[in-house]
Length: 143
Ligand code: FAD
Image 1 (tube, rainbow, N blue to C red):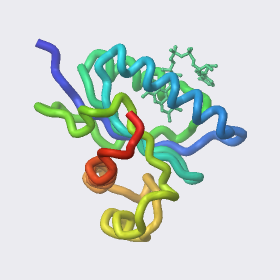
Image 2 (tube, helix red, strand yellow):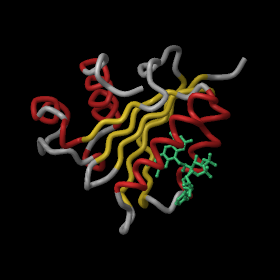
Image 3 (tube, rainbow, N blue to C red):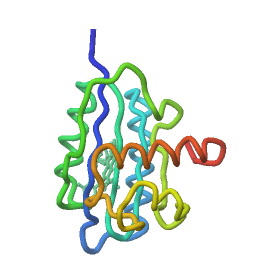
């Protein structure tokens, strides 16, 4: 039996990355993730990315290997990796969250500075933050 895992990481956007690059990342992610049974969420701001990936350990490990080497971001930092018995983001091949659209109440709840900085979040805060937004926006978030 294959193990199901959840991986959470933070990264900083590489200089020169533009809106079209973000669209490419999302498009590729949704296409590939759907095929491979990967679910998750990606939050983006000018500071960087916070991403959660859930799925079979072999596909998540392989994808994380590609993500680390992707030149569109830098300082890829693993926040959490654990076995799971159920998914949080089962509905989304990759939910996309713009940090500047997140309610200040949620930011305040999960960060000491009340602003989105994935490098200033613990693994627990990062996951709580993504999960709360996903649940709250269940109806409106693009799958
Ligand atoms: P391709 O069809 O080879 O590429 C898709 C598009 O991305 C093309 O336009 C290509 O030019 C461009 N591209 C690919 N790699 C790079 C690169 N290293 N630098 C610049 N442009 C590139 N992939 C997923 O499958 N699932 C995810 O959830 C996921 N999340 C990501 C999150 C972030 C923050 C980043 C930066 C990347 C993410 N990726 C994700 C992309 C991943 O790093 C690989 O690029 C992708 O998995 C390659 O898939 P492919 O071979 O089908 O893409």
